[in-house]
Length: 341
Image (cartoon, rainbow, N blue to C red; front, side, top):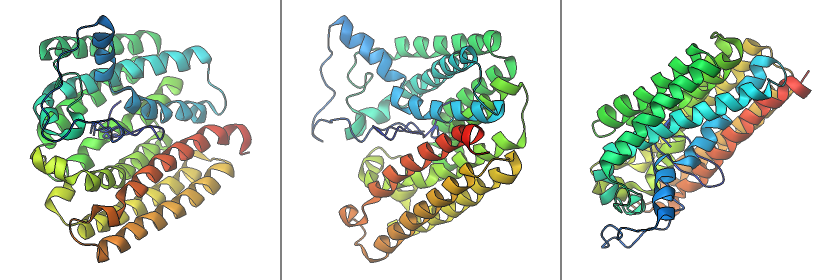
């Protein structure tokens, strides 16, 4: 579970990166050295090293990934799922996402050294060696797969492993540096938590988690491209072909609006497919309307702003709203079986 998904409290991406999500690993709130600064000197304390290993897993991405896991368990259970199952699924998902994020850091260490906002990560600062990080990431992957397989079920374990491989191989190695559509398809890795949460409870797949998978899939491009507009120069300097690097703000904003409509329409499909109560469709409709308004406002600003005038574009407004949208939507998914009947 990894992608370009982020916490509303402190956004981070590693699509974030569906991509998490899926979908993708930048933290706009981390302090960064000046553009001329090189990698920070190697810290020597044990505390620094331990903190660096935790940082490799990108815990703030994991927070939002788990937010899309647990509510689906409530929906699948049609109530409160067993606490032990929630804990086992959350811990296994955390380890799996941590594995994928760590391996992403290993492969992208050269990019992180060139991008201002990522130079303070563990590998650019040489707090942890790439070999040690590789071993750590692989170990987390093995442990998470066994944990989920033995304590939850092997279908959930297989889905988590598939998400891990898709994020590391599909997105990080194959797509990220080659196509402007990298976050669209690579972000699918961040959509898997919806499937994992459902299968953890039921042991099988159904249309309801597939719909939520697609909600996160269509959510990822508007979310990530809004952030990529803000940090376009950073991606250009690292030669990463994010869409805002290769296309103008107006063209990007048009695609954001298109994906926003797909996302909102898909979110409403859950109502008849899962047979939800009144709470979920009301919340989904209100959130969706607000998201569409914000998307169109970005498009309007892009139509009149100068090509490099990021300040006037205010893309982070949509970025932060996208975090709120996904958070509240999945809270509604969890609450609907309890109060929505």
